[in-house]
Image 1 (tube, rainbow over the protein chains, first blue to last red):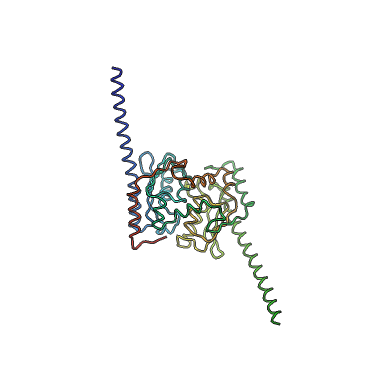
Image 2: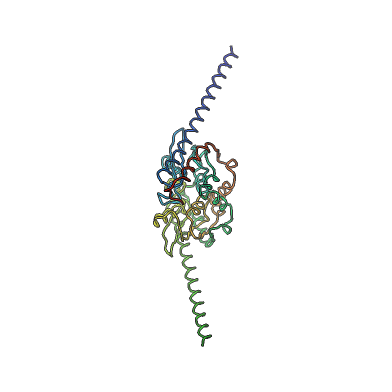
Length: 181
Length: 181
């Protein structure tokens, strides 16, 4: 009896596990569909480039964005940046603890940097930097440039005034009431 | 006489060149001082981290920013991002043509990405990513992570749904009234 109880228990658990995995996969698919829908609507509405993003916490969308670079006249208005700002404003936090990002394309270096600063749990992405490059977006080129030293880049980067600038780090290090991040 | 005229002309030109070089250097110094002052004021006011930035066009500051990550609850509110948004709004453009960026610290990967999208003429920076890292900022770590493939990073990046997402690039490629950038 003990064995048959165990078997029944294990069968039930397996069924539950399998249906919750399926449900989970359905949810993942539907969130990515939402991100892709945003990318399509953005093109249709002339908001900017073909990119969309949603951010999910506890099974609910808490932030959305689609590229608005040209309509907002803002080169930082990428889908992920707008979605991160939206989600953080919703959470009243500068961190995306326990959040999952769904983005229609592999994040560019700017958005990747923003993702690292925001520290979500996981990122799902659909198309790649090479797909973006084929449609005229500089993602792959910027990835290359970021790996170079300042002196090697195709935009001129010149260092000056380090000694004076270090004062700000000294003040920061000494500051007792600072909010670290 | 012809020779003495030439000598006088060349002397004058050299004097003018040297004084305009000096004036130029004074201006460069004063713009960097402005960026550093913003970084110091930001610490004092508890706006966020110790970073400041100004953007200059035709000898005038047209955009400013200091880090406001914790006060704005926005992980993207770095000095450079805020200054770029400010300058673009001033210029009514998503590009920083002919602009020079002065930033108190070497830009992090997010800001570097934003700089590439904004395409300014030149960037002056003062302290380095290593200086930032010493005061607890993740810049150097994020530079390392960005160079890795999605599967190697310490945040989980997973690809899915590429085929569906490619539709947005197809629509973009076909679109006749798009605003490219």
